[in-house]
Image (cartoon, rainbow, N blue to C red; front, side):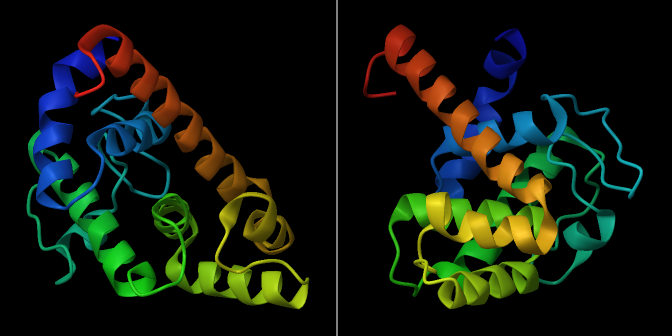
Length: 172
């Protein structure tokens, strides 16, 4: 809780800037690194948002020095906005599903998510719904990792939302 409170202002700043619920971005950061900015993956992802330096440097993100906590959160949130806006903004799906598909894309890549949605259609499932639909196709294509990733973030998001509503009121 202390780490969350220490970082919440940054999540709020960049969540607002890119039109995301800041608690959802905080939940993603918790899934990625347990809010530990010193985290580094074997694949080369760094920081609280576990971004690859090449992703942060890409023209669609363009945030330098992701070793800096603020820049790391900024780059991760901007990348989420890019994924949402490029691949899901014009899709006929709820905001909750846009978030789920954006998280899945952050984890598995947008091309894989496109494959998952196509496979869900073949399976007679709704390609615009993640839970109990496309997540089944994801299991076939990439296994449990992305399914758990999205489910965990959603669970952490609900926990953060309950915490904030309980301690700071529903307007928070």
